[in-house]
Length: 186
Ligand SMILES: [Zn+2]
Image (cartoon, rainbow, N blue to C red; front, side):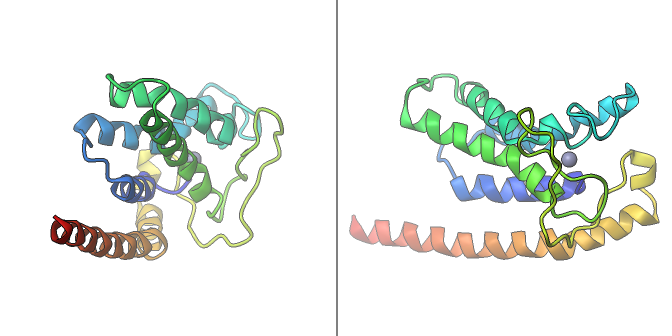
């Protein structure tokens, strides 16, 4: 996996890109939940489920199927008054699906472990992207807070932190420009 910091940074950028006017604490909490939830499968390692199993690490919970399932459920929790058949519900469902899927995408850019079962439960093949610059994060807090974990964080600053920061700066400029244009139109 990439570290939790890397996953949250990407999810934050996605939330800022959607930038809903009603973005609440609940919206942001669900955004963070979505981007970290796939790694709940590390519990399987504790329970003795082999890494390469469908329920193993980077298996079903990292798949497109899982991301879409989560995406379909969460909009109602984020905005309880939203109708299930509204355009906004569909947009939020897509958003939460993509945030959940962003986890597997980042993992597929890492340089260690097994690949991601994007097409589980229909196909258990594990995939990596051809280019894998992100250092794999150690599993477990003790190993993370070691020199190995520090190296991972520095690597993520380069490959995740800087691109995300550039994206947010560009986005802020576009959103400011848009706001001033709509003020002028009034
Ligand atoms: Zn993961």
